[in-house]
Length: 208
Image (cartoon, rainbow, N blue to C red; front, side, top):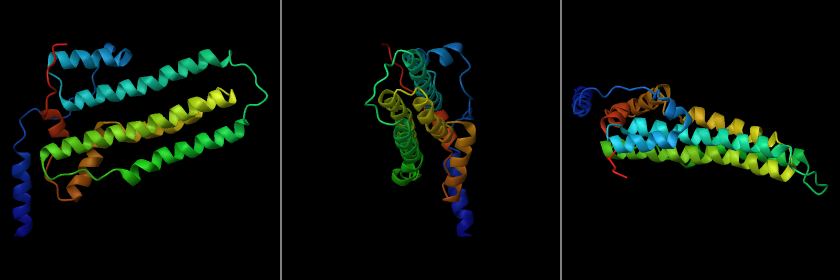
């Protein structure tokens, strides 16, 4: 009986979500792929985008920054002068790999479980965790970028970027990752729909 009552309370909490709160998928606009910041600005001006769509646009913007840094590395690779006092590439690579591994495991140690005490706490907790993971993933690529300047070896950046991509696969606000988060919430006895809340909440419209 207590279990049935708990289930009923969970169902009532989920039923408060409006209709049409299924995952809308990723934006398909060419502007979203090529110039994410402009797509974000357009979404803010329209006032029609939801939190999940905005997070996906921000995710794409950060991911594109990794590509742009790679372009810079390619452009600078041939112009890097050879210097005798550079540290050994193997030493720098070891540092890049060590930090890359740290970037994958550190978030698991410091991030908090999603708070299902209420709808606002769940959405806020998910958003905070997403940006924390992005920060660690980007740092791995930036360490590779620094390794490129220290050693003069252009392959240092792809080495760091590999760990960044691994982090991005885990943190992406994709349907698969959201479903995995929902399974963990369900195991904790949470009756709230993470995807439903992210879709139901609209971003504030801006005139700027």
